[in-house]
Amino acid sequence: MVRFDGRELFLPTAVDAYVENCQLEFDGEIVAGDEHPVTLQDLDHRWAPGANLRFVTDDDRRAVVGDEAKRLARRLFTPRLGRVGLFGRLLDALFQLSVIIRPTTPTRTTTAAALKAERLGISEHEPVCYGRVIRAGEWVVLHYSYFYVMNDWRSGYRGLNDHEADWEQAWVFCDPGSSKPVWVAASSHEHTGGDLRRHWEDPELVRDGERPVLFAGAGSHALYFQPGDYVTRIDVPGLRWALRLQRWFQNLLRIRDQATERGLGPALGVPFVDTATGSGREVKDWDLRLFEKDAAWVEDFRGLWGLDTHDPLGGERGPSGPKFQRNGDVRVSWADPVGFAGLHGTPPPLTADTRVSEEKLGHALDDLDDRIKRRGRLLPLAEQISNSTEIQEESKRLTELLQQRSELLDLQRRREFLPEHAPDIRAHLAHPAAPLPPPVGSGWVLALWAAASIPMILLSIAAVIVFESLGIAGITLAVGAGMLLLEQVVNRRFQAAFRLLVLYGAVVAFFAFVVGGALLVSRYAIGGLLAAGAVVLFVTNLSEISAVRNARRQK
Image (cartoon, rainbow, N blue to C red; front, side):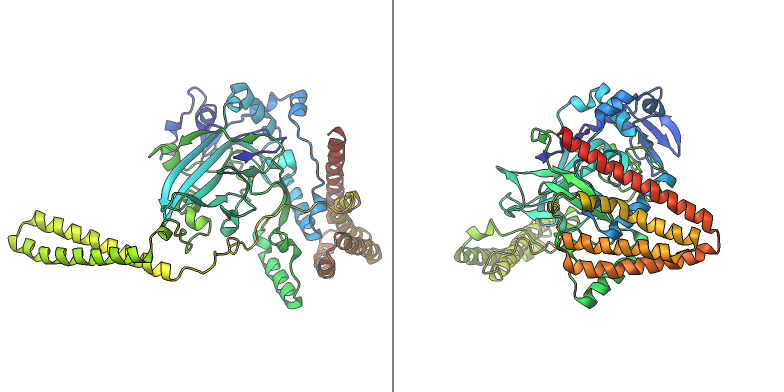
């Protein structure tokens, strides 16, 4: 069962109706979809990376009118920047400014996609779930896949990205001995490993009877085990050195990363709030469709399922299919779901084996040994007869008996080393995602400070460049440092106050170094750009806060 946000525009749907209303492009040229509809059969081995489907055309975007855009607009209920730290806000500012210069999904694509799906009746059908049952390692795996017409996380909820089409996944790992579910795993952005799964008996896993319940992020469709707001930190490859430096600094001073304690992951990364409150529709009656065996659109098509914007960061490009990554490689989650969920080395519990007593196990082994001896005596006789068929049959039977004996010996050995107590079902969790705690007090003072902090830093740098006045920058940054300490104290993060103050100084020193080089180039041009960027960020952040307050009043 999946519970969605009340503002969600897109629910899991069938791929065939979507594909039939797409254009198929290859290297930027339309190869199908204008005169003859694209079908699932057209998505085969001919299309390597470089091909992509396109659901929303330029005409679809131009047809969107203001009233339709207002009708489909979502309302924000939480000030996002007030929930993350200073360095997260700095990276967020860089991300916001990068959207201006890098290729992203065109504006009004979300509205056009929602209107087109509504007009074609795609969104009116019962939500669709694709699935397969496989034997992976020692597990029986139930693999569920969900397809969405659009991921509108950025335009709808101030998240990381927008892209046409979206694939999300979930898995249930069952014990082959008893057929009972043991683990549930759910996809969440680009994360992998044990943090994505919960034990069937884990109290964090919400269940409705014998069905696990997942909570989908608004717009992102990432899946979580508990309702709430989550901070997702996207690792920035160019800043991994800073992340290592930060961890070394924390270990040196024996400071626990409070972001990690709350399951927010690394403190250095672009932070985005993912809302998965489950306040909207609950889907429990699925149109369940098994992946067709050898279906070309699953097994062979390596193109993208949405518009390819050629975004160098990758986030604004359409996704690949359920089996392949964007570069054409097979997804680990498809080929090795056990490894993807961090289950290698974790065998299924011996639920079926515990019913076998030690005495019965010993008798079964003695019986097998006798049968193996008899077969061992018969095999030379078959060789003397020179009957090749008889030899093959006797050899096959003997091999089967030896395999059965090996399995029983393995079972006996594993039973000897069974733990006296039940294993810790949460021992595998390193940095599990956890909902954000409610903000302290009203949160609006901190939200305003969060909106103004990074523009303040940029204005300080601009003051140094334009007016060549370190005094102005010093006063501004001193006020900022004081507000930073107040932010940590109000949030009761006393250890983090000292750590972030030191890192704040390091950032100031870094920018001072950069500014020193910039002065040799053109102080007015660079200073003007920084000031303009600060104003844009401040106005954008204030508009978000205003939208949140208005939405709360209307609610």
